[in-house]
Length: 219
Image (cartoon, rainbow, N blue to C red; front, side, top):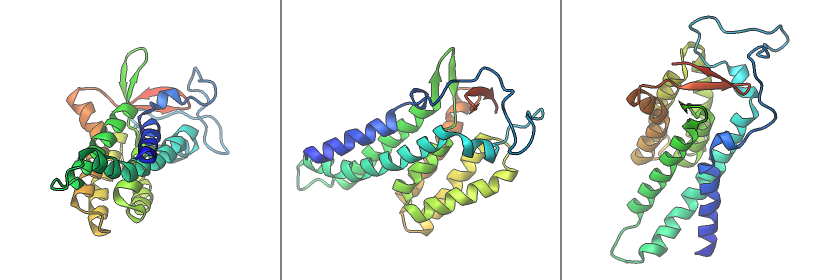
């Protein structure tokens, strides 16, 4: 059981370490460095709150979030059932539902941790790549890969991060059921994706994008 506990602790560290602690390089002070590949500096048009694929894919911390979500998600998925089985230790009690509920709580807590920033003030951020990474352990790699490709292809008509995450959650529910992950896993994945925009609505706050270490508040 010691090995499972160590794996669980590693998974919790990967999932529950806030993104703001993983700073890479020096923060920039202005927005003047936003550039289009091969072209001059550019800025957003008024009212443009969409995700720019070239910006999102160039951010190293996005891929760090993606990788640690995959690794942490699998660590939790593998270790929690074994830990729960040893802790409960009652043959007549089914540990399957307890393990799934525990995993769901851990992952939902991880998403909330990743979306909250407390710097000069409380800011809510959509942990997009983090949620995309969690899909591999929750729904399986087939649904996760197809969902990743599909949502970024659909992104050209998505107006903002909140709609992006809602659309992704809806699509992953369908893909999870289609690829046999199960209804529970499908519902959990949908909940993980819609939690950030839902919390933003409930607390009447805006989601904020972080571009080149510069915060831009968008709906």
